[in-house]
Image (cartoon, rainbow over all chains, first blue to last red; front, top):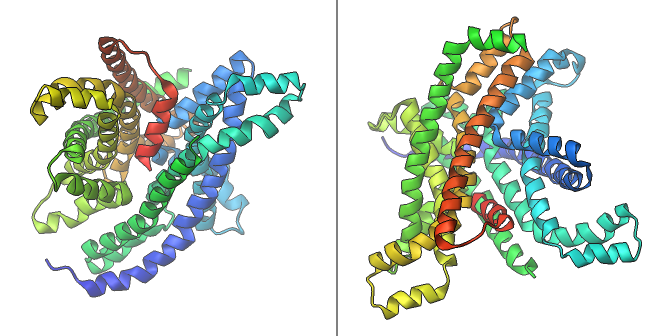
Length: 226
Length: 237
């Protein structure tokens, strides 16, 4: 079998379109949700009383340790069960499933990001908390003005790395039939029997987007380190 | 509660089948991943001129292109070329190569994290490279790499759910089949399977924790959590 450069060239257009419309959208919005929720979980684990805190920690563990495809299918089943496709009849099913994917990715990765935030918060010296107490800063303000800004510095590269990991997991959207880049590659490859070319292009697009970002994160980490 | 027990007894053979597929992929994947991590990790720090570069290229390739793309490559592209691994084989090799690449970063990082003085001592004793790695550096790096490998193992177990895309009937597949049965329903079906995955991951993770404690005890060290998380996030990106 020979590599057909023409077939590869023809696949670039539709794959890039799917990449921009779905893959990138899910990654960006999913990362924003994950970063916000992760911070909420991390603060919750420190602020909640013992038993609710332990329950939260256990739920986060279960979400973190179970597969994304299973969670995506579960999300789709819940939407079906609650009759979501009819209730949101004016939204196209594919669009609705894309939103669902964004939410599931956001929740799944928020459990990882919560761990990164936790490490960042723990790296702050005890004196900072004591200083805030000495100034009788309210708890809320202590978090907002003292702890979070410092923790973020230590956490940011880690968050970026999880965002890259999420990006590479987006093909899992296939299980809920969202037409992202790899399922497009499978479709085009199946129609023309040029699997080699289309998957090669899909892989290269992933590499071209994730490798520079990963290098950037490594640089950022060196720069932000104390 | 009785719903859950009823569903468990009705679906026991199917869940067992699913569990076998998931465990096969997990154990096979971990075995391949360990070999890949150690070989690529050692190649990355070897004194030979070409090996580190070759290792770097392989690792960046497998880390940069998505797991699903690699699996589809193994599953769709190789058979017409005369190498048919079958769905289970493709799954094991794909998971092993992908997570092995991540693992090699953990191995490399841990070998580099062994204090410079240890390397210099072996030089003073004029030990050969294989001897000093095996007898001096590796035992110390082993304790450092276990936390990272632990996290990757849990991720690999979760990664076995890609079996679905290879047409295999693993636990995830049976969760969705059970859900369609009106006698079982959504919450029971997924509840059971979520818990099963959680228990598998927990078992792997506790096993590796034990190994880690043992390795640390042998070196007279204590555990450090923050470093581990950071190391995993770095390795996974």
